Amino acid sequence: MKKNLFIAKVALTIFAFSTFAAAQAVAPAGTVKERDVRAAMYFLAGDAMQGRGSGTKFERIAAEYIGSQFMQFGLEPAGEAGFDGKPTFVQTIEAPRRETLTGLTIDGTSIKLGDDLIAFAIAGKEISGPIQHAKPGDKAVKGAIVILSMSADSKYENVQGDIRQMSRDGAAAVIMVETTEMRANWAEVAGRKASLGRFGTLLAVSTKGAEELAKFAEGSTVTLKGTFEAAAPTYTWNAIGKITGSDATLGSQVILISSHLDHLGVRDNAPGDDKIFNGADDDASGTVAVLEVARALAAGKKPKRTVYFVCFGSEEAGGFGAGHFVKNLPFPQDKFVANLEFEMIGRPDAKVKPDELWLTGYERSNLGPELAKRGAKLVQDPHPEEQFFRRSDNYTLARQGIIAHTVSSFGLHTDYHKASDEIKTIDFSHMTHAINSMIEPIKWLVNSDFVPQWNEGMKP
Image (cartoon, rainbow, N blue to C red; front, side, top):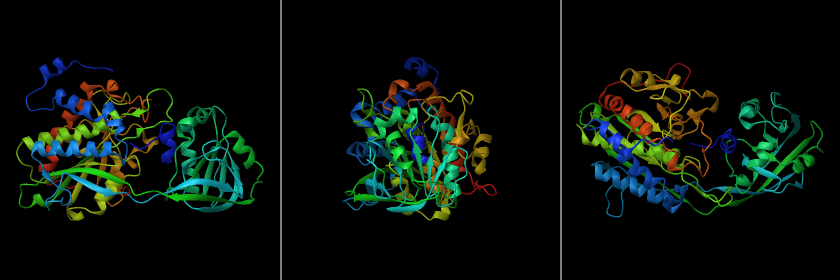
């Protein structure tokens, strides 16, 4: 899941172990087994996988592992043709070339990246507008470069809504003045490199940098000018398999079960001794859910509809794997019925009942309520302020009109996007139960003629 909880929220604006023996003793025949869940989790989220960083060889190893599992379960390969002319279980995708910010001046005054400036997002090589000195809650002037000052003890989670509103008001850029929370996280994010993109401009400046900005009078026009360097070609990998539908009519319709297989890799500038961001909950847990759903469907009677299973690469780096998939669908889009993404189901969320999962964008379509009628323990997202519907690969598909939601039980735990998101924090009893609870509802969906629809005014 894309970052929020301070670093991640900014970028998006931009244990209970149960015993293996006991779990196996009560697991009904044919259901998801904790043994299998543990085995896959220990592979994907172990230190040897070095955090499955987007575009790294470890992401590729993860994709190859998942593809081999698909093969073992009896799925059909659904990727582009390999060297032998036959479809593959792993897609190799060249990611879009990035231009990375290397320097920034404000009306000719240079503010040093890393030391006094962090760029979370930048939307242009040159951005001009009037200076607006603002506080949380102020309305942004359209086209303004907003310098946002907050009290030292402000928490980002309490002002992110204000920043989003400033963007909606039409601010050309928002520059946050550091708070105590930002300073505590500064070293971890100082080395990040913002890429030229389309998601607006969001910067943070140190107290020293803010002193430079204070010299600009309210309403005076200034220009932010960035210098950029083109990145070398990078690649990402999707693991992809399918079960072709058995019904003469429904077989042409497609249900997609998905997750993202990458995480944040190794961060040398992370605080403490542990530099490996294992991504056990995010999103090894969702990826294992996809594997177990694939195993269950492949072991039973062939579904009437065609089911694709895809574990996307580079979600954390911009959703490149999902973007490639939706731009190069291996079937007509009008046959694409729905997508269920699994993300962060490794721990229960205290805001819902212990046996419940939540569905992002539950209120946007009739898919969630219909699955709930068929036994899915799905409820509305209890964290609407986090805008999770927009923060996973489902949104890449939803923007193309496809009914796409994410299943999760993320309770905003503090290990999110940190090196501490490790296997030891996973509640395997919860996770196994969560996957099991979705098997029968998904079996209903892939054998039904039900076609979900967006609710009025809710289509992205």
